[in-house]
Length: 221
Ligand SMILES: [Zn+2]
Image 1 (cartoon, protein in one colour):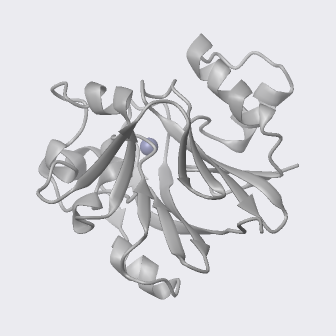
Image 2 (image 1 turned 90 degrees about the vertical axis):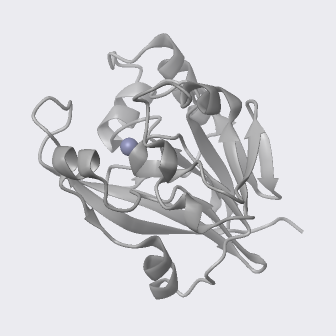
């Protein structure tokens, strides 16, 4: 039998983008819980605990991941975690889940060793069970991690088998629905070659829907 998963989008924070940032105004930070009969996989964990630099630059409003999961009717502990990348707004709070297999691309892990890349203490915590993977990785039957470098060197997305077909959680492989649509229409998007190839990889899955980390809309075919 084919595994069927259901995607819950979780609003984990909003941020106020600073002036120098390519984005403007207030924007959402989403994580996702992909639930099936035996549990759920958590994709991204939002912004970590209060931090002077993050709070000064982004004035975040945080919605605690444990509370959001409870309100969604999910158990406290996921069966696995997939981190799209290790920027502060995607891996914060992951330290709340020691012992849970946590998938991160090896290239991302390497990039995050550099000073200033992220807030290290958000993910570098005792008892973590990081699984460093290269490229494709079967997280569990019906949920596959796919390397989609571009936004960061080791960004990854998910392909998910749902009741209505294959869906993709793009994360930040594309910022918005418009970016994705421009790409599939073959228009110039100003993306790097690597980012373009990553979107080609996702488009080749022929997903019926694509979800994004920072866009409150879902693209549907
Ligand atoms: Zn982000």
